[in-house]
Image 1 (cartoon, rainbow, N blue to C red):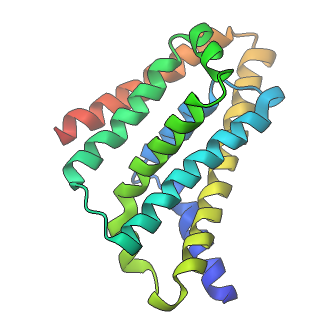
Image 2: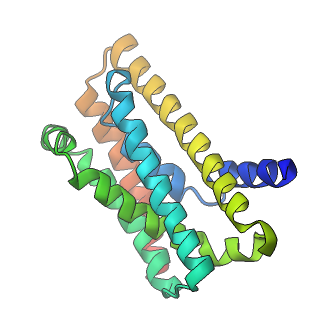
Length: 192
């Protein structure tokens, strides 16, 4: 039991911190950029909503054999990244959206479902039939830990850029948004 917990927690962690597939990493960066350490609690909730969506799609794929064309999922994943990156170009408008109660968390859950569907078939091959629940739970914990590590890193880098080097937060968000949008567009055009 401890072995399964450890193996799938590590698998979930490295799924997010995978240098071969940076889509998850880019999405969490774009999610974290508008926030500061003062609002980390809300950001952690959003990250957890993303993990929830990701996990729900893994559960659905395992138990109900959801079939969604891999072409569309592989195309939708960079589109979710691009949409999040675009919000960084309009920080004042997005700041108002952040304060809305339900819309951003629901969208974040939906984006988590899309990202999870991209990994679902592969995950089904890795999961043991006799320990499905523990494996899924452990994997979700690993994903959450990795995402929180990314969030803390991004908030720390943003703090250094804006407070130590005295750069404009709006300009910093625009720069990061532009870099990630360029990567997302590249992924989209590769997959069309």
